[in-house]
Length: 207
Image (tube, rainbow, N blue to C red; front, side):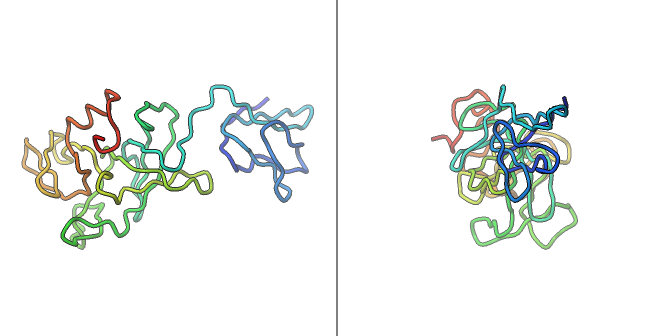
């Protein structure tokens, strides 16, 4: 039998090929998963089912997550989830967030992925530690917002030399090489905040 991962709503087979088994449902000729688990295809009996053994926890709407940016694409970022509501997550789930319309105090807006883009000044980079709130689970994707003051970049290392950074107004500055770069920062940005999160003591803006 072949075993592969599945998420709620995923199309896993067609009724012409398999019968709907445990933790699945039929939708307009397609068999879909009704839970998180492993797809199991019984090729002898032509039944597909979902096994929930050791199912990882899926964030709910309103949950606070912390993770690191693992991908930048267009006006979106992908965040690999490390913590859900103070609890370490080893699920490997990623969340996505729009950066469109995010602005700094004073009205500066937009974002930049590349160093040479001078049209906007807010920057996100792969490796940034992000805090956000889950706002949607549409189409089995975890959508978060980072627009509120307690959300955004919790901590990051200098992209130029990998050194420690400190907050300077709405930007981060490297204490090693002096590189300065504007970010959408959380209200409690800093290395100490991330260390506290890592130790499981706080997640939501120090509250």
